[in-house]
Structure formats: structure tokens, C-alpha cells
View 1: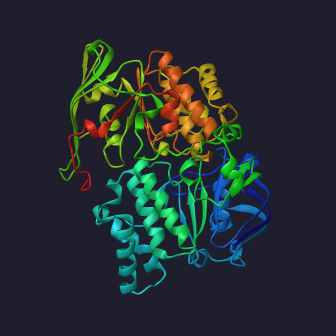
View 2: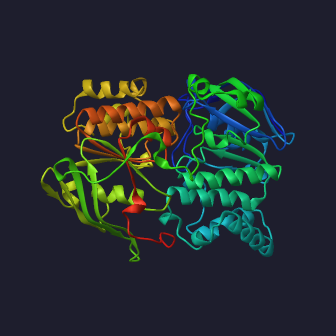
View 3: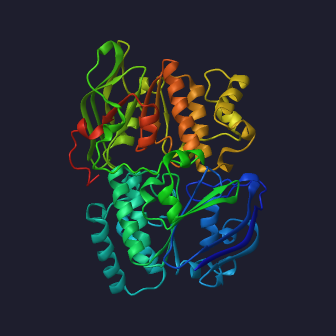
Length: 494
């Protein structure tokens, strides 16, 4: 049983963020605090934690697994009990024998460089016998269908593939309590189906599951209870009966995403988004002979021809590992081993030329935040510094109050919006976004959709790699399934 009793939390920094998580994704809590949290989770119960970005979901998970206050410094009052023991006073390695966590950014929990070693690590760390470890690994590899991912470099996996390994490394431990923080953030529909099935199996096995999520639809039939957080407090609790009665409109009114689940087997184009076809060369970006090879010579991307309509918002979709992020990197000229040409407005652009034409917002925005403040971050992205305009951009993304804050002090969703602000400030003609709504709540997903539409109204060409069906429905004009253009058939050995 998990019990949080009269919990109040203030971060020692006074900034309301969690320091130093590998991967850099903290969870900002309103006013730097959790307030009067009273929550009991029974053995074998499945609880969904949801609410707006920065409401404190991750903080609650980190209280349960002991990272607060044992890793993240904080002033904590009240008690957090797991199986009757106060985890705030227990050693982390003791808590880890009962509680496993899948983090929002799976890189933050990897300790090895290859997938096979990563699966074995947690059990080795607990001193299990080799025979027992191999037995557990074989079972999990079969259950997760991980054979194609074994003996692979973790650095060469897609975001979704890394998430699979993270879930599998948790399953190997056999722990009874499993916490998951935004586990679907970077997953395609097929992999979300697999995650749903895994969670269903864990529930059948009697595991205690606590999942912090914005994308609630795939969990809606599994959860026994939904806890909605707001400003660091529990705002509402929905019983299973109330969840069954909840309409999409009711949830949107609470600032939550849809509870209607789009399964992978359903046609992606039900929302009325046009599938991209041929358009005139005057109104299109023409991509020719795009290819990318890894250092080992493996061909990861090979696109003989593709057209993307100019001045529109085009969604690039596909399964994890199909090369969507690689495609964006090549398109904007970052992939040094990439080849190919882009024709735009009757001009030919080679790799280096494209770097001045195209702006990319990366999937992991920590890679492109450099300055000491949000305002400076936007200013250095402008062709010519204009503080008034920079502040307007920050205001349009609900970030103006943080203008003087360090970007790394923000939550993951807030950092994502900073990167979007920099893209707007750059003034480039073509904007690329790699999963821009990953980890964002309903309100800010709509905000990103509105901003992408505003970029289109300014004549920008917007290309978005996304698994977010709600974003596609909200703002995208066209959809391209990358697998239909990428002639590399087998990505399993990438």
C-alpha cells in the first residue's frame, strides 16, 4: 500500500523545480510546492495521475520512489509510506527493491550502452544469481517481442524503442509497485497499443500501478481511479463509475485531453486530414534522393522523391524506428552523412544551404537551450535582437513571467514551449518540429496547434513529426506516412 499523508513540499532552491535529473526534465510545481496531499493507493490498484503541465504529477511519483528528498533536495512535511515504511527516511537501494519507475525521458534511467546489459542491470545490482537473471530476461524479451532490439546500442534507438527497453528493464525486476511518468510521450499508435497490453498484463498480475499522463485515452479502460492535480493540490478524484460517465467535453472543461482512444488498426485519416499527394512544383518543397547512413554503413533512410506542400502544415507520421527524426535532421542539414537535394522556390539547396533556410525544434529540447534566461534564448534566435518582440513571443506561450528564469529550471513541457518560441523568433521560411506536444497537457497542445496555424498564416511551411492524433486533428492540413516513401524496409538492425 502507498500512503501520502498531509504532504507539503517546498523545493530547497525556492524555484519550484527539481534539479539535475538525467535528461534535464524537471517538474515545476505551482509556487514551488505540493500542498496537503492525502492519497492512499491500495495494493493492486491502478491509479492515473493527470492535470496541467507543472501541476506536480512527477513530484508525487518521486515522493513514492524516494527520489524526493533523497536525491532532489526539498523541504518535506507529512509522511510517504510504502508498505508501511517511510521512504523519505529509507535508502534508495532499499526502496528500489519494491518500487520501479519508468521515467518520461528513458535516457535518464539507462546505465549501460547496449540493450542486453541494460535489461540485466537492475537484477545484477540486487545481487541475483546469473541463472535467475537470464531466466527473467528471456521471459521479458518474449513478452515484449524484443528480439530485434537485443545486443543493440542504446544510442542508435528511436525514442519509442528506448521506451520499450525502459519498460522491459522494469519488468525484469519483478517489483510489485510500478510508476510510469508520461510513458506514451514518444510512442507511435502501434507501440501505445503494446504499452496498453503490457499495463493490462501487469494489472492482471496484481501489480500496483501509478501512471502520470497527459495522453489519458489509452489508459481510460484500465485505471481504477483518476486523480486530477491542479496547482500542486488534488483538485478532483474520479471513481471508475465517474470515469465511465465522463464525456470528452467534460474532460476538456477540466483542461484534460480526450478519453477516446485511436487504436493503431483504425485508419489514421479518420479526422479528415488529407493524405499528401502530388502538387505543382511551384507550391511544393521537392525532396530528391535523400539518404542517410550510420557510421557502420547501415542505410537508415532512402527517399527517392517526396513533395511537401508549401505554406501548409504537414504531419510526418510512422512507426517508431522508421526514420522520422533522421528525416528532419537531414532536411535541415544537420546530418553530415546525409545526401540529397531540396528544391524550394525554384532554387536548389544542398545540405549546408538548408541550415540557413530551415529551423528545427528537436524532440529533446535540452540539446538546443544554451542561454542564462528565457529572454536571452529568444533574443539569440532572432536575426536582429528585438526585446519587445521577444517578450511578445514569450507572452503568446504563457512564458513571459519566466523571462528571467534559467531554461533548465523549467518543466519539460515549459522547455518545449521555449523551443517553439525560438523557432518563431528565427523568422525562417521552413519550420520543423519533432514531437512538439510530447509531454504537453490539453491546453498547451491546443496552444501549440494555434501557434503552428499562425506560422502557416504568416506564409511559413510547417512540417511536424508527431504521434499526437489530437494535434493532427487540430491543425494539420496534410499527413505523410514516412514508411511509404522510405525504401529502407528493415529498420530492425539500425
